[in-house]
Length: 351
Image (cartoon, rainbow, N blue to C red; front, top):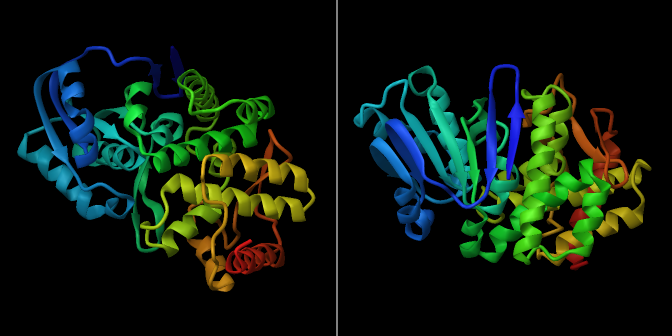
């Protein structure tokens, strides 16, 4: 199946199917990590015909999503004399996709790249929409660019080697899409097991269609697209506090979704039953749903480093029931602190 994204300056296809032969009349560099390289690189290499094909392997993990790693990718590109008609291929999860896209956006002021995502999280979300970037000590993805890929190739067969935790991290992003935009999809998720091959393909398709619809309306995240950050405002702080080592990105998003839901319940936007249903669906796939907030004031101050914050106001994405959401910077601080304090207390009590 093919989903198309049409934007003011470009359009591209997202193909969900077994990977077919790819032919390029230019120099191509594949960016990957040791884990994916060992599992799938030979398969990918057998699918590519190019004028010149090389591979750069970077360390595996969110903690390596930094400028030092970007420099190593760029160095490889310069050593192999890539030019403006050359191409990068992001072959891995969201970290690989973000860094490859960022390198493509800045190498000789911009070259093409394609996404071949291998994790569920990157297949349903990160590979689509052109967000690229790296982390620094101040927070997540604070350095980057919008740089759309030329194409995205989603081959669900890569998921057969995915560890359980990585699978759950991707499911969190699927649930995010449903809670924000599609009540029927959420109810379908409640009724179906995503460990089934046919069901996960349906979930990938529905998630990609949702992401494509949102991005086509708001490429640069001036409005609607910000809703896709549901769970991320809280989740990014969790990742930063734990130095990107304790939780996978999707796991932190799951924690953040529960926190955001608790804010919505306090504001009367979501019922306790609806919040419990979301939490139960996350728990079904062993996605973390709680976090020990050690210093609520410090946690709160971290919000102001988020890209979504503006003019000293924090932008929250809050679910309105299941299937809708709102973007607001009018959440009283005391409400947020109450949620953080409850989170801290319940975690320490083992609730």
